[in-house]
Each structure stands twice: as structure tokens, then as C-alpha cells.
Amino acid sequence: MLPASSWLRSAPHRRWLDLQGQRLLDFSKPARIPDGFTALGDDGRPMKDGGADSILTARMTHVYAVAAGRGLPGCAPLAAHGVASLLGPLRDPRHGGWFEGPAQAGGRKQAYLHAFVALAASSAVVQHVPGADQLLKEALDVWDRHFWSEDEGIFRESFAADWSDEEDYRGANANMHSVEACMAVADVTGNAIWRTRALRIVERVIHTLARGAGYAVPEHYDRNWTLLKDFHRDRPTDDLRPYGMTPGHFVEWAHLLLKLEAALLREGGSAPPWLLDDAIGLFRTGMHAGWARDGAPGLLYTVGWDLEPVVHNRPHWCQAEAMTAAAALLKRTGHGQYEHWYRTIWDYIDLHMIDRGQGGWLQELDRHNQPSAVVYQGKADLYHAWQATLTPLLPLAPSFATAVAIMDN
Image (cartoon, rainbow, N blue to C red):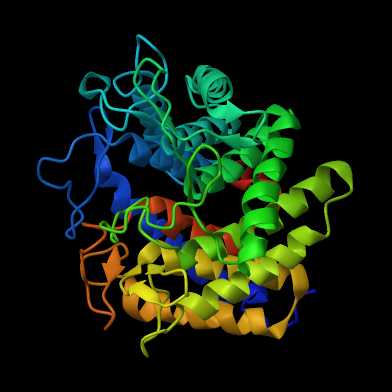
């Protein structure tokens, strides 16, 4: 359905995407440290006193596994390093599961992290990375046994190290990334239950709760699904659970719904028609609430319940997800408005986010589009930015690793 003039059909544009993706992969390679991967500073070097981070390690493992499937040198060994780290120093050898840092540091076990471990393992399995099958088996066992709530059709949020003390919280963010991971796991294992679980999450969080809020996405609930409107009011710049709502998540959900629709159609021949309607509504509300609300371009971080800006800073991932959603809607509908948004957002990323001095993408900009570090510090990690360069090159389904294995080989 794409018009001939679409950037998605343009060979020079597709080569540009490939080049930007390869530059990001090269920039992030110094993030490898003995126990996994760590955050990079603005200069592209590991941040001082930064240790292995399990979320970053899982994300990097996923990205480098998919990149290895594209035949890019240096990526397969990095994916193997990530798998070994997740099976070794980052895993809890006593109770199973993963902490946010090395196992000896302890802490709580978060659904957000475990979704990325499952995603990483599934991508590594596709590329036959050593240890990937074991990692996927352990990840799915933990994910299924401790986090999935069959009664609710949702993933629980967090536990103490021994799986006691379940948190009195239900969060949209962790479940959003679980939708992505569920689709990838379904593709890799052939087990359709994971795709069904993705649909159940979407039905609750988006088709019921967000649709009832005009396609804004409230994120914070207690275990009885009572909305927590004051959650983190004193921490509006929290990096994972900020006060209010996050337009970047509205648009991120939008493209995940289209990927889920495509996956259901590809595997079973049918999908709920509301997936497209909800994706359109989410993108419309997200861009209305978040884009250029203070006169300067860019998608801001958070808004309040009245959709008025709370944190004006522009994280890199919000721009990447807005662009990805525009690309997905353009592929799905062919409508010119999404071509406009696709070009507009890439223009913004190119002129403001890509750091041509020190490499990589800037992590965050302020309301004047100057570099900032209020919410996030250091350079952006690969996950959102690199996937933004790959998504326009691939169909909506199957998931990244499976699609690359099918199309590039």
C-alpha cells in the first residue's frame, strides 16, 4: 500500500538506515565489560564506576544477536558474551531469575528486566548462540512460574530475591515490553500461548483501560487495578515509573499493536479489528499530547492527567518509538499523514539526536533541544535507537530475529 514516493521504498533512504544502524552498533561495542555490558558516557567510554547492568546486557544481547543474523562482523561474539553473562554473574544461582546487577548485589526481581532476558534469549536462539537454548528455557520457566498471572492476563511487577513479597503494583511499562517479548518467544518456540498472552495484555491495558481514557495510557495501578494517580508525584523524572503519563509509551504501544495484528494474521489468519483502530488512536493521542507542546520540535517525556506537559525533556527513546509507530502505520495503511510524520521525526532525530561529534545518539535533550541529563545520563543504549533503523526495513511480522533470519539469508 506504500506510494512509490515513500521514503520506505527509497533505496538511498534504506541505505542511510543501514549505515546509521551500523554506526550505532560500532559505537556501542566498548560497552562490553567482564560481567556483561555497562552504560557508556557521552564520549563513548564506559561510565566511571559503572558495573554490569542486566537490562543493558539483555538489550545488547538481543541487538547483537539480530545484527549477527545480518552478517555483521563482531556481533556474534558480543551476543555470546551477553548470553554467558546472563547465565553466569547476573543470574541468581540460588533462587533463579535475574537481578539488575551482579547476583551478589541482590535487590528485587523486576518483570521489566525479565521481559528483556526472554527477548534476548529468543533472539540468541535464532542465531544458535552458545548457551541460548538454556537461557531461553530458564527465562521462560521463571517468567511463567513467577510473573504471569493467568487470572489477570498480565505480568506481575516484582518480587524479593526468594520470590516472596510480591509488590503491590501493576505497571503498564513492564507489560508493554512483555508484549514484545511474548511475540518474539512465540515465533521462536512455535508455542502460540505466548502470542495469546500478548493479546490478553493488550486487551486489558489498551483496549479497556487506555481506550476508556481517550487513548492516553495510564500506567500505575495497585494489585486490585485501582489507578494510582499520585504515584511518584514527588519523582516526576523517574526513569522507569515517572509521575503521570508518557506519550512515548502511547506511540510505542501503537506499533506493538500493529505487530501483534500482523503476527496473528500471519499465524492464524485472523486478528481483532480493534487492534488497528486502537493503534491509530494511540498514535494520534501520543503525538497530540507530546509533540512540540512548548513550541520546539520533539516528543516530550511526560504529561499530567489533563495531558498538559510535566517534564518537557525529550528522551531519545520517545523519538525512536514515535518514528517506529509512524513507519508501522504507514506500512499498514499507506496514509500520507504517516509518511509526513515518518519524515518529520527522522529529520528531528538527524538534526538533534545523532551526535556526529562523539558518536551515538544523545540520550536526552531539554525543552530547547540542548543536551540534558535530568532523566537519563550518558549515551543512549542500542535498543531503541538501533531498532528504529531496522524496523523500516522489515515487515511488521515476524519479530526481529526471525524476520532477519528469513529475509537476509
